[in-house]
Image (cartoon, rainbow, N blue to C red; front, side):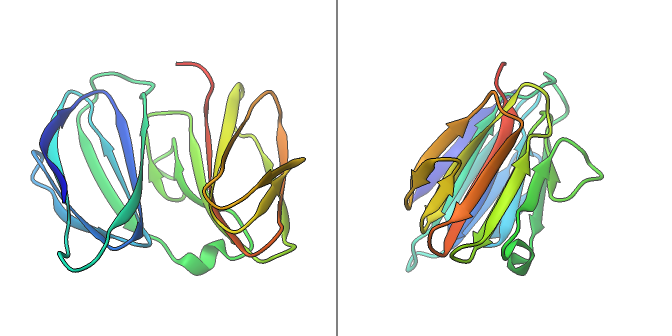
Length: 185
């Protein structure tokens, strides 16, 4: 059904649709449909109100919504949405979010980087931590992964910190979200 109009402030909110269409409306005048392949970010800053609903009554909508504390309080509220090419994550980490307006993906008021990936079975990659003191949370959307020595199945999550480098290997075809975030508020 969705979420009626409600307030937020001083929060970075990232929405990633996995299936279906999510309709967004907010007090900044934005009205948008967020579809699979899109990434949406909303910096609530000094305060906004918004609502989210399943756009289609006859179809399911599934999405991830990730909330982060910003590294700057009371910024001017902001909305952004982009459409990504899924082929750009085939056997590689596609950056979808960063702290820089000039970088790939959307940007947030936080020292964070998010990546989506679709790995074929047997594909391996390394991920180097970008921010000093950051950790990584991997959410395995489907398939099987090995992160270091840790085995991950569909819908498993795994947090890693106090390291500079991770090794990732797909034990089967796999799709996952990698989120690098600060370990302190």
